[in-house]
Image 1 (cartoon, rainbow, N blue to C red):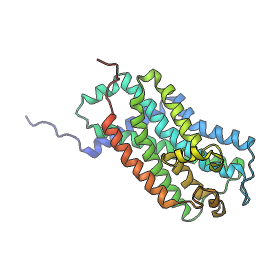
Image 2 (spheres, rainbow, N blue to C red; image 1 turned 90 degrees about the horizontal axis):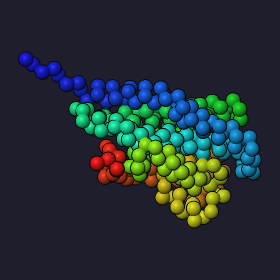
Image 3 (cartoon, rainbow, N blue to C red; image 1 turned 30 degrees about the horizontal axis):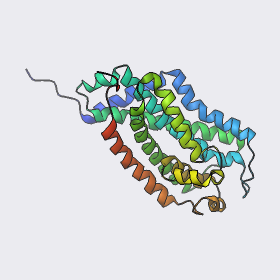
Amino acid sequence: MTAPALPSLARVYGTRARVELKEFFRQRESVVFTLAFPVILLLALGAVLDYDLGAGVDFPQYFMAGVITAGIVGASLQNLAIHIAGERSDGTLKSLAGTPMPASAYFAGKVVQVLAVAVATIALLLGVGVLVYGIDLPSGADWLTFAWVSVLGAAACTLLGIAVSTLCRNGRSASATVTPIALVLEFVSGVFLPFDQVPGWLQDVAAVLPVKWVAQGLRSVFLPDALAAQEPAGSWELGRVALVLGAWCVLGLVLCVLTFRWQDRDTR
């Protein structure tokens, strides 16, 4: 009797991606927090803070780059690390490891989930920014810059999130472990305030981390070129943005391969 043909790798990837999307969007609390938190930040800080940024730029316009960066970090590093730690604790990863499904399909599904959530978050933020604060949207080639910075940033933070998930001892401690890491990365990277107001030594720390470069790349599409002078190098450094985020994608992949676990550390 002829054995049934195995599904193609593309079909396995597609099926796993659909499973990941369904599982995420069925968790109402996670969906609301991931999508609503950046919007709340935009509405709250945009209404309260009033920096004199020059070049006719108000704080909501300046903050769009930062809050979109926070949305990308929330959808990738933070949300992904917490969910993977939970799946490791409840035995989901162990069960998947025992199936014929290639391990790469699991990670491909997570990448699709992150990209979908990040796109939804960015669209929501842009809509709220335009309707509430009259944000000026990017134009022309700036949309292309917006796209590649967002995709590279999401990829780097996704890989970093997978690696960070291994720091969680179990699913119960995941949020307490991952959330402070994400918040510290965002604060030192100038996500919540103008980067030139971050202490110099913290700017040096942020310069080796991916989040700072995501925010800087996004500032280049929402702010006039006159404000590039406020950046540490006096320009947007888009070439370096691409180089650093690409390097973090490679480093993140290496960390994932070396550190990823299918079971909790305390599992015998």
